[in-house]
Image (cartoon, rainbow, N blue to C red; front, side, top):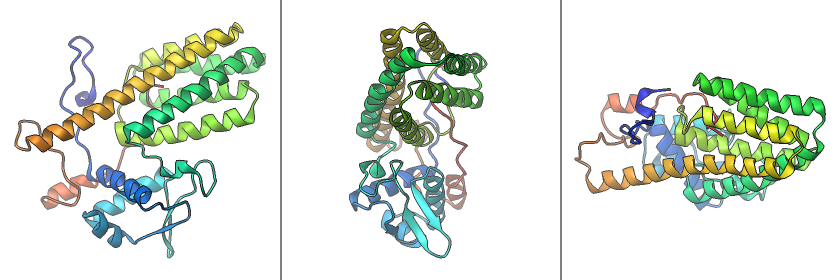
Amino acid sequence: MSAERKVSAKGGGTTPRPYRPGYELVAEQLLAYIAEQGLRPGARLPTEAGLAEILGTSRNVTREAVKVLAALGRLSVRRGAGIFVADSPGGLADDDMAHFQPTSMEHVLMLLDYRSLIEAETARRAAGQAAPIEVRNIQKGAERSLEAGREDDADAFAVADQLFHDAVGIAAHNIFLRSSITNVRRLAAQSDVLLFHGDTPGSLEVAGRQHLAIAEAIAAGDADRAAALMTEHIATTRQQFERRIRDRLFSAAAHAADPSGSAAPEPTAGTGTPAAEASAVRRPTPPVTSAS
């Protein structure tokens, strides 16, 4: 994890906020444009040059933003055909999730509220219905996440986190609950990329310990405790997202009020020197699941 992104455990403060690449800013603008225009899955977007003109940025940064959103499953780029709004996770043309805004406080909190409802009930049912092999898989995912958390290995944690939550979904023995969890976590991963872009929002070890407590409740068949612990687990994730979004809003407001302040200003996509432009189109780091 980059040292500039770590939170001080002793002082409680944070170091200066990390640099936000230009493609990330333009990706946010592009998602907002899609929502404002009411474009549905399958709708064709303007060309890269057209989008750059609409968004007031450069074509290079726009191209990188399109690549990021395509990697997240929000856009579909078809060679020789153009850029299209990709199918939503639910696979329905009228699915409102097609307009999910990964960096919107309102959208992220609604997503986490839904996730809390779905995953708490899934944990409850898993506690009452999990087969022995399913319990072992849940425990394995929890133990691996705790081990990765203790080593502060974000990549290993992401794999174990996925294993744990998938195992709980399978143990609930309801394909619709399992599908809902898969879809909601896919949307959450988009927020992870655009909000955290490579770092971790909270303690991986704490998340791993929460996983283990949930696994123990499921193994004991304690449905109420499993549901309560899962609710607490999602609440921790919610606090992390709220803090990050508010920090970004505060930073943006502070910079707008005092652009000549001591803090380094965030680059505006498509403007500045050629060197800044080149830096703005750095490729994003691979998505890493938050401490959830």
